Image 1 (cartoon, helix red, strand yellow):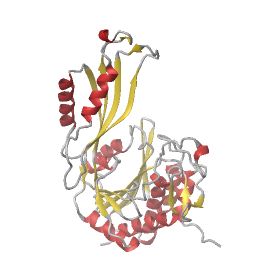
Image 2 (cartoon, helix red, strand yellow):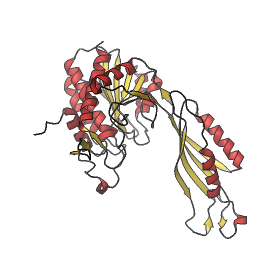
Image 3 (cartoon, rainbow, N blue to C red):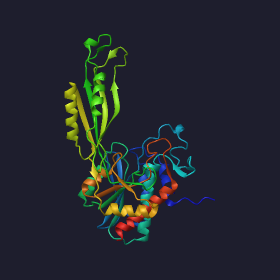
Image 4 (tube, rainbow, N blue to C red):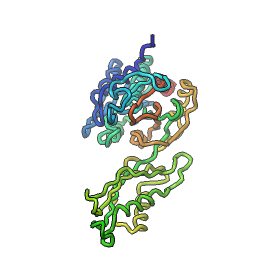
Length: 384
């Protein structure tokens, strides 16, 4: 007979069964708080622009350790392509016969939400009179546009004088094996919509045309030129095209415009202004008539190697027996909104191999180890 599932895995299953497509919460935050309410966690809920944010706190004063997560998930795609239904939280072995929890959000990041919640519950149960403050912040809009999410709550925390000393984000951080990577910072993210203007006309008269699609091809090639080589803490700034739109719908008409959506993931060697200057220089060099509209999604940030990093590395070593590598690779996270408060911010969670994919899954054993690491970290930070 197989061993009963842990509280962490059971809670993760319950969360997966709630179809909380961003920015919907579908009762996930109420479920998480139900595990903390008997321990007299005080709570505040911030509603803004259709987003719900749960802040649950226990204790008072310093040090203040905050776990940060999100209850929303990305759409699963075609359910028929999944080995197991995306919203049932089924436990089943993978191709290596390792017991896995399957479902949308298993790794990103309902598994971590569950592990953080159970770690807080068990910590306060064992140490009801602990020093300082421990807490959980969950938003329902991290996978979407983020409006009304953690950026909004961060401003409230500052106003309420509730700035954390330490913040651990439960985003999936690990690569080849669980426990191998801690994210100590993230690159910034800058999105641009670039519209190149040409001259529309009949394809049979190229002398009368300026084809904006051809011009856009030259622009894309130029934008792929490296901006930098990175540095000792950040990889090189990267550029990717994410959408290209042109055409009138007729096969014999060259359109008048072509629009590109693109994104830079930039390190601390670049800024929005420096990237904009490079774009303007390329447009001038290619003699293109274009409009550029930017959206700054987040600035790069880096957590100094302080107490949080040291204690987290110790906890991972004790539970997993591995020395975690410090990394700034990957996408953005809501940690970028907490770091400007002066908080030490790190990210540590499950393996990221299947996030946002069909058949998203996480090893059951990894979730249990994750909870142990979170619990041990609380003890190291709050009891010493």
